[in-house]
Length: 155
Image (cartoon, rainbow, N blue to C red; front, side):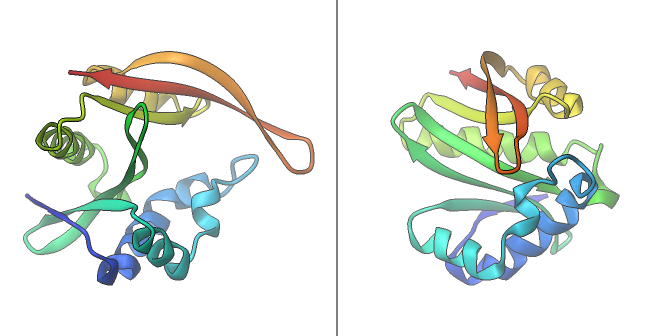
């Protein structure tokens, strides 16, 4: 497995990996906002300083994560592994690479938010050292509320 830093040119690939991975949430209430993103919105975000890592297996893209630096540390989101490759440790490898990246730039905290209804992701992050440090309700239009946990790992 090779994990590379993305460039703006990779926006379409990042978008494709994300949509494939997030389709499983299309029937959630509400569906993940990842499904509303476009190649252009990803490209714009990369142009404004967002970063991403892309995982390749035998030159085939299999996953990615997007992230940015905030005051508290490195904040990641949209961690995506294509459905046929899920459950094979790819997400953990991507997050290990993200930790390596953070260490190189002297950042000691990695953070994320997870819907409480997606317990498999909470369990995944717990298994590699992330802890829940807060819970909140995100208020969406049409009186839809989403319960999320904030998680972090310090090293």
